[in-house]
Image 1 (cartoon, rainbow, N blue to C red):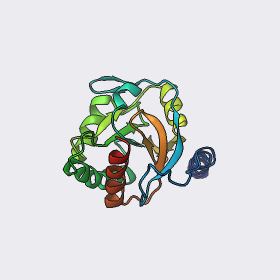
Image 2 (cartoon, rainbow, N blue to C red; image 1 turned 90 degrees about the vertical axis):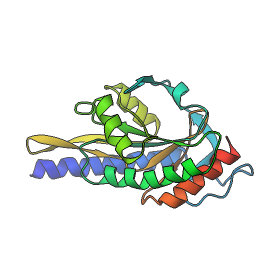
Image 3 (cartoon, rainbow, N blue to C red; image 1 turned 135 degrees about the vertical axis):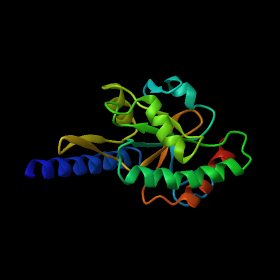
Length: 208
């Protein structure tokens, strides 16, 4: 029990440090004149290009090229998640419904990345996430590619033993990628679906 508590505390500390580093290194600046006033998203003035990456989706490899041309909202989790992930995906489905109705030429996309590739196949992730909304993009990757991708976004995760199985502790912060697939900002919990929906619609109109 003590070991389990220690692992949970360590994971929580790692998540805190990861978020602190992401905020310290990519501290959101005041909105540029070309950007709208946003309710919940924190967007930086100078987006940062991501290192090359290759994730695996149910339809094949996913690289930065597949994420260009629209704003992307990235959330990490896993299909065995008991509460945080289904709650977040339910909230994000409400934001996605707003994007679908906005009549945008390039509507924002939600990308759900599983940090549990040991149990989550690309097909299983797609079935899980699209249950909440059909437009959700999904992917995962083997190690160390998965860790390298999440680290580039300032997100962390950790495997925590739980009886005869395990769970995954992971960041709950959402990362924004602009239409060039660059790191462009973050959205911190608690998630506010209507505000997220409105913010991404405004960003899509300002920087399509």
